[in-house]
Length: 121
Image 1 (tube, rainbow, N blue to C red):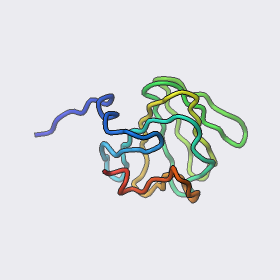
Image 2: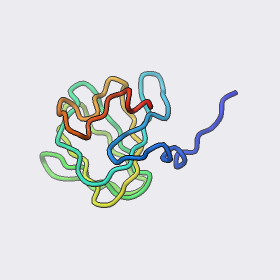
Image 3: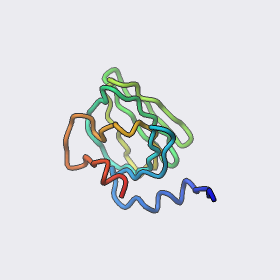
């Protein structure tokens, strides 16, 4: 039998900032939750769009032509190939929807980069 998942309870699996956890799948799209604080890294995903939905807190998405502020309940789709840098001054909870092929930090490798295996754990 199928059972429901409470979105906020899914964040209990997230123990480190910038370390997304896969909580579901819709066709070839993964649903991931993450807690953010601080700055990630400037990067792009050459072949995938990614959707950010703000569950709690605020996120400033920096783009080369200026920032966009996202508040609780807002969502933003970053189109493929667009360089961006997520920044959270305070703890922020997000839901990400992106293809399974999406690399966490694009072609940029940092200490915050997480493999898909790490995100599935």
